Image (cartoon, rainbow, N blue to C red; front, side, top):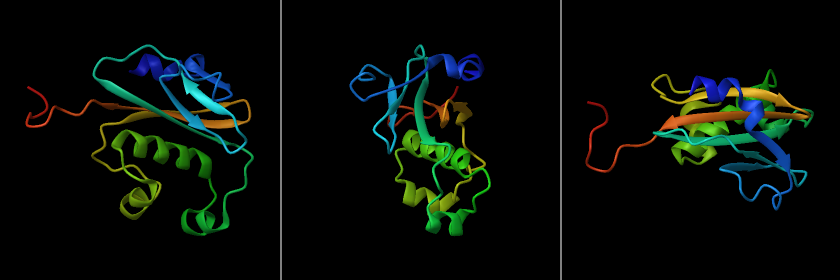
Length: 135
């Protein structure tokens, strides 16, 4: 996983939704673009991306709640982890704010890609129902 994260920029593409239809996973931007992940499969891991325009203003209600310092990096990280956990962002906020739970097994990296802030995150596959994880 560290190799994929350290080379994240190599596996990210920006384009229209139609251009990125073949991405492993995508994030849609408010200006009509998408960011797609084209990295190789990582056995035992799921991947998610979230992207926002770096220069976009922080909505006032979110700024009051979470502050503006490094907001888009924290936001995209939380959104990526929400996607991996299949948890609505509002539920995440109530439990964790824009922080990461201390017991999270997810790994991530946040990068600047042109005018965007993008977080790529991986989480281990969930064990099959009725099975316990690990040996």
